[in-house]
Image (tube, rainbow, N blue to C red; front, side):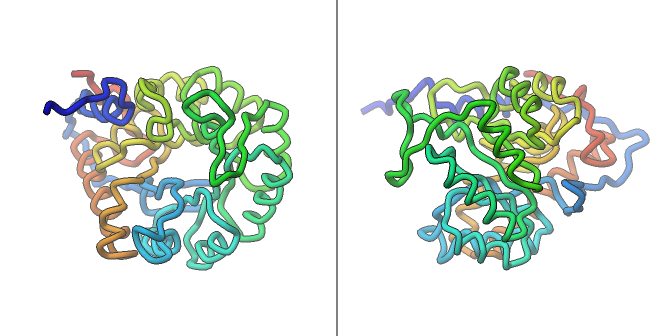
Length: 296
């Protein structure tokens, strides 16, 4: 029987778009590149970050905490998605600098409480994945029977004002939402389609240049979805990202080796990124020319 292919599979469309981007090479006056990331007043070894995942205990015992140990060893930023307060405390106790992403709970009191808890844990930043407001049938989503709801500009402003930490919005995939985030005082955005919550989602890198033009380096832009190798990260950085999130690519190494597998994966991808930078006269991650990227 022939395999049924979903033509609208957003993950596949995103992968195809990544692979359609080619890299121009430049060698004269090149230098050994730096992959260091400056973010919210701190310095990290790489712009490759752990994506805002959750519930990884089936991948590895205390998978989120183990991942944090791996990211700390790699000198990289850890992100944490949905999880209880004890887990976030254990993640931050590893010493990994962590960004906490909160679901768009219908009960805003829950959101304010989780923002306060992230502050107490010493998180690097906090934020919300607004793309988890609806299910694929257009109804307000529920996650583990907890109701979610879309958020207004006024609500987002209230979350921004509720914390001294940088507040990040995850799930930006349009110029319109980019303007709204800037107007709300958000201090970072994640260009993402949440691994294709609906079919035919625009690939993040396809909209990224337009978003980067609007942001104009006022706040960091992060990208996730389909970052499988260092060359993917290079393309995202060239098109305007400050850093990228790595998700499913880490799951196999995490399951096989725990923290060591996470560290090796980030270091290997960073090495490939550095190789691309060296071959394109890109001295650091802030100076990768968008003109290096060609469309097949």
